[in-house]
Length: 263
Image (cartoon, rainbow, N blue to C red; front, side, top):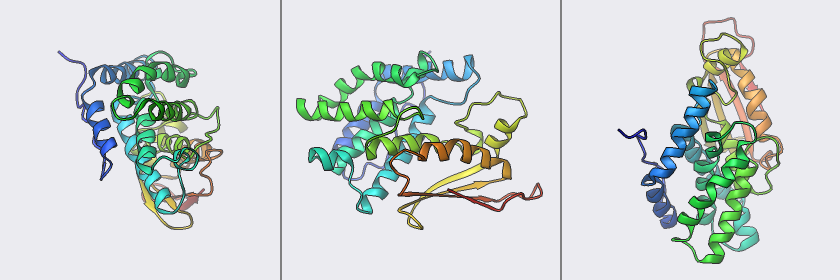
């Protein structure tokens, strides 16, 4: 029996033909699907962490694509366009590839897993990009994806719009207890209560800045997830001037400590 299920990557590709080809390749790649499974065995079963497998990377890919498109609509050019004269469609390929590959290193180890993600991603990047681009462009895109992988965690600062987008999108997978801050299952503490307080996350265009991230919480404890995780991911992401976060309390089970929280 196969250990891998639900292997279809669903993304709004629009008119991006390169992205359509890529999504088809990803959805049919058994080796990649198995690495996702291995990452979750390590994260969930062995360490008691939250999901770092197929559901997580698909959520990140969709969030990253949406943020990138909003930025482009508001005149913010991706680095692949500004510095290499390539296209917005190529930027979409970068953020999707970085999103689906960023946690492969969790199959090996948690600490500095982004470095192992780079090693494990090299073969996939060569396989995917060499069939879509010529050698020069495939190499450029590969380097941009690897930069995004190396900076998706808090230790390093992203130096491209694309990498910043992936870094922020990674932190937005927090609905319904899907916390990015690890917590022990069944244990009641600030981590678990905070994680379970995040009800819904929505990415919208417009407001005080080009991108508005709206978060609905059932209780004030959810602020811990937002302040400790999301604020740190946005900080030094290169997107600080483009993203506004607003969180609202929607529950009525507690005496409300705060009704609205903003970054």
